[in-house]
Image 1 (tube, rainbow, N blue to C red):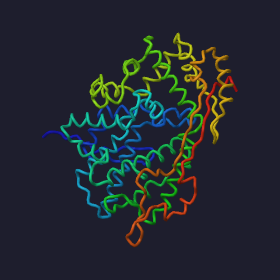
Image 2 (image 1 turned 90 degrees about the vertical axis):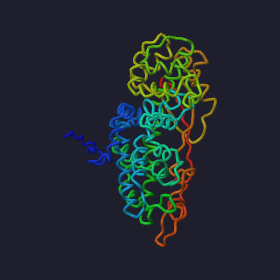
Image 3 (image 1 turned 90 degrees about the horizontal axis):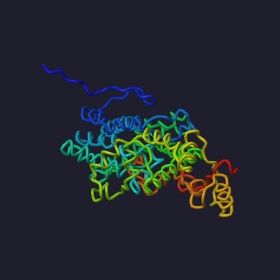
Length: 417
């Protein structure tokens, strides 16, 4: 008798406790090298420069979102929503793989490795490549991921106002940073889920949990994702890669890992992802999935000894955590202030005017707790009718929940304070 390996593993997650892997094929996908790569991609990039505990990975987040999706499917079935076994498995696959296209250090280097291409674009490419190797077994999962499947609530569970992605990352990021304001009652929200006309709704008694979720999301953006020191460190990293790309374009020989060298010395864009460029989509998928945080960190160590003074200086700053000074305010910064700082940087760093942008720059950030362009959260009232949450929640009378808040930041060397 042939021995059968039990693939329905139980994992011990620090956030949820024991969680189950729902299905043998899902376990096979977890074991796929492209998913295992996410162990080496930090969920929060350089946020550990501010919150030392924030070293959790995209892999942990993917498993957490999978666990929440399992709870969501069970909840909906218990309320009479018909979900086939194939729809269930496809939804599990879509949420498990939803972040597979994240590059090194997560959002920090999005559009820096491959210009003009989002992590969602790369995720779709990788899903399609895996699908080819499994003879179309991911067809339905891809349709759900893209939002083209006829039953829209499946896509809303993956990408919506109250999707399993957001429910996990808010609770997980709150746990690992220690920012308790971000803790959300994910179990409570999931148990309030229902479906009306193939769209997700929330039972009326869950409205306060949704309000708390929206407030927690706003708090996490200002305290964690857009913390000024996080902005400073991520912008330093972006400028290191920008300088490396500039030198590579001039033909300067830069030491780097093979995977990172490919993207430094070859201009890769959306056409290549779509299979219409110089490089095949197979090449891009292969090279991209060899990249993780270690490629960037190791390369920066090499670049600290570069003969290029700017690349060397920026890299040393990153290694020492000697970040830019940063200021935030509600209005754009005056050009006079920028010019004064540029003169200081040019003098202190001994650089030409064309290189001042590596040291002095300004930009804006926005925080929107409730996304108006996503599907509105519908509340299922006791009489059976539905209403938009914005019409039944007192919270939405407050500007900070329903309007985009924009702040401007200014970065410059601490030597110019």
